[in-house]
Amino acid sequence: MGIGDIFSGIASVGAAIVGAVVSIAEHVGPMIGECAKVIMEKIKDLDIDIPKCINMIGDIVEILTKIFDIDSEQQEVLGAKAEQAEKTVEDFDNDTIAYINYLKNEIQLDKEKFNSLSQEEKLGYKVTGIAIESQAISQKMDIEITPDALVLIPKLESQGINIDARTLVKIFEVLKGEGIQSLNDVYDLLEGKGDSDRIKTGEALTKALTENTDLHVSDLKDAVREFNDNH
Image (cartoon, rainbow, N blue to C red):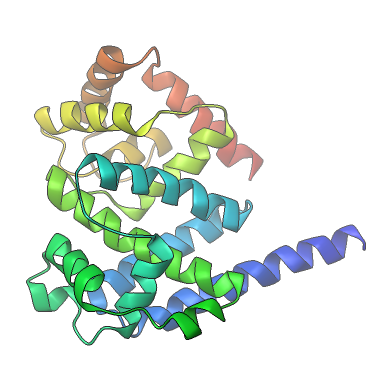
């Protein structure tokens, strides 16, 4: 097998996962469906191993879900149940935690269908589960966790910057205390783009990092810049 065949195979896997997410999104309501599609598009645009990237983000989101005592379940299963269910999060006034409780306790997984899924289809359901859980975490923390913020995880980790989930929570709490309402502001700061107040965000992130890590804002900016330059 040549290099061209390898890259063709990677592209094929990515296209299959994107297709699965788009198909699932038609059945899970606009809020979760759109969030899942945007997460998937952001991951695809990173131009790195898509399954690995999905799992990186999924691992952090899963740990955050447990930290906040959100009674969820395996992300692939959550996504599959969301597709099966008649109700969407909109039927719960966008209360994602109530929606997760409904999916976990009232929807019986179609195990025969689930067990016959391809790996790409399961990853599509996993992205949908990530979308649901990230919205629940946003609700619990009262700070918006956006798809752009989620893709910072593999960008930073690929450059050797690993911040564990409990430290992330502490950082988020400081940011919230400093008036940051969306993690998209952090994305804007590190990427050097967007319309948010990057001076305010920079000061808030400096405080959060100083209190909880040995990192500096410049370390994160450099990591993101290096990633972007190489992809």
